[in-house]
Figure (cartoon, each protein chain N blue to C red):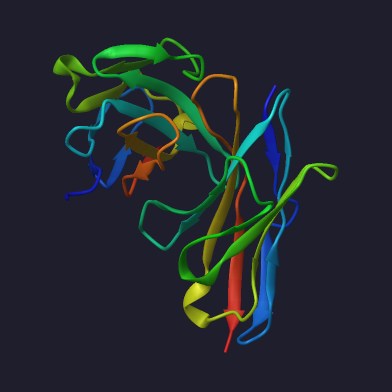
Length: 113
Length: 114
C-alpha cells in the first residue's frame, strides 16, 4: 500500500507569507495527525482528525495555524502569516484504528526567513 | 500531564557492541510506550510497543525494549549494533485511559562506528 505522503518536502518562505502543507494519509485510515519538530526539540502534537472532524486540536500553537480535512481524505495545514518560530519539520501520520502503529510521512521542512 | 525524557542527545557505539538508548516517561495512569526510528530524509518508522503483558518487548531489526514500571523507564536495546542502525530514535508515550495522542521525546541520535 502507498504510505503517507506529504507535500512539499521543503518550503522556504519569508516572515508574513502564507504556506499550505498537504498530507495524504494511507487509504482507509480515518485517524490523521499533525506533529511538528522544531530543531533539537521534541516532536510535538498539533492536532488529530477522525475522518473530517477535529478530535483534538489542543496542540495548535495559535490561530495562525488552520488545519482542514474536507471529505475525510487528505488534510491541509495552513500557516498565515508565518513567523520565524514556525520553522521546523511538520510531520503527518495516520492509522486505521486506535493503538495500531502510526504511519508517518517524510515530513515537510519549513523554513521561515 | 504526559511526557517523555530522552536524556542523551547522542549515543555512539562500536559495531558489534550492545547498544542502549534511554527513555523515561511520566503519565498519570498506565502507559502505552513506543519506539520509533527516523532515517535521514524519511518519516518515523515504528519499531516496537509495550501495551501490556511481558515487560520485555521485541521489535523490528533485532531491537527490544524493557518496560520497568518502578523506574518509569522503557530503554531500547540491541545485543549487537550494526552500522545501518545509525539513525534518530524517538520514544513516545500515551496514557492508556487518556486521549489517543502520542507524546514524543526529543530524540537520540545513534551513531554506530565501524
